Amino acid sequence: MPSQQRTEERLTIREIAETAGVSAMTVSRVLNKRPDVAPATRERIEQIVAESGFVRSRAARAMRKGRHGLIDLVVLSLDSPYILEIIRGVEEALEPTGLRLVVSATHGEDQRERQWLAKIADGWTDGAILVLAQGQSERVQSLRRRRTPFVVVDHEGELGPHVPSVGATNWAGARSATEYLLSLGHRRIAFIGGSPTLGCAQERASGYREAMQSAGVEPDPQLIRPGTFRHESGYEQTMALLDMASPPTAIFAGNDTMAFGCYSALRARGVRVPDAMSVVGFDDVLVAPLVIPPLTTVRQPLVDMGRFAVSMLLRQIEGMPLDALRVELATSLVVRESCARPAARSRRQAPS
Image (cartoon, rainbow, N blue to C red):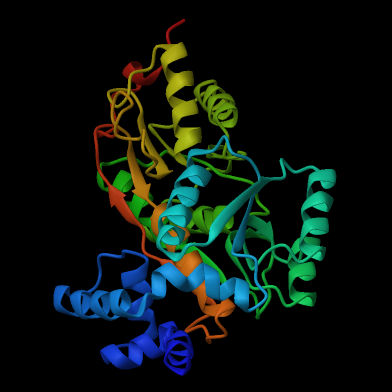
C-alpha cells in the first residue's frame, strides 16, 4: 500500500517533468500529441508516462479528488466551420487524458445560457472552455466567483486583466492579406468585417486599415462594409459593392464563410474570380482549398487554439500556474487561386 500511494502521488505533470528534466509545458505538449517536441525528448517522456500509468489514471485520480472528469465547451452554435475546427482541437487534446467533453450551444438565447449556468452551480464540471464569450458576461463572472477553471477562445468586449484566453494574431494576419492584394496592384480593396463587438473582428479591421494607410491609400469608407461572419452577409455586402458606381477590384472578407458568400454573389452576377474580382478570406477552414477557385486566405490555427486552450485549462485544474494569461498563435497567408492583378474596368462590371 505505501508503494501504491507513493506512485499515485508521483503521477503529476510537474513531477513527470522533473523526472524527465524538462518543463511541465513540454510534458503537456507530449500528452496533447503536439509535434513541436524533439524526438528524443518525446521518447523519454512517453517512457516515464507509460511506466507511471499517468494517462490511464488521470480520470480516476480526478474522481478521488472530488472531481467529475468532465470539461464543458460552450459555443454560440454548431453550424460554423470555425467552431467545428476548434472543437476538433479540444477533442484531440482531451483524448489521452480520460476526461470527457460536454458541448453546449447557446445560440445566443438567454434561456440556454441560464440552463448552462445552473449546471455550473451544481458543480458538475471540472473546467470550461468558452468560445466567443463576452469578456465580462454573466457566465465568465459566475465561473470566477465559483473559482471554476476556465479559458476563453476569442472573445467579445474587454476581457479584463485576469481572464485566461487564447487567440490568434488577427491584426498581423489581416495586414498581410491586405498587403498581398496591394502587391498585386489593387487599390480599391473592399473589406467586409465581422461583428464590431468581437475582439478578433476589431483587430482584423485595424490590420486592413493599417496596411492601406501604410501604402499611402486612404480606404474609401464605402468599401468598408459591416458583416456578421455568416454566409448571407458576405453575399449581401458583395451585391452592394457591385452596385457601386466604382466597384472594388478585390474583396477581403473577414472570414472564410463570408468569402464563400462573396463567391455566391459574384457567380450570380457573372463576375469571375479571380479574372474580374480577387477574393481573400480568413480562417482557412477545411473547405477553403476545395471551392472553385481555391480560396486564398489567412490561416488561423484553429485546431491548435483548441489544443492550447485545453493545455491551459488542465494546468489550472491541477493547480499549476499559467506561463501567460493571454496566448496568441501565429497566423499565415495561404496563397491559392482566388487572386490576380486587377482587370480592366469593363471586365469587372456586372452584366446588364
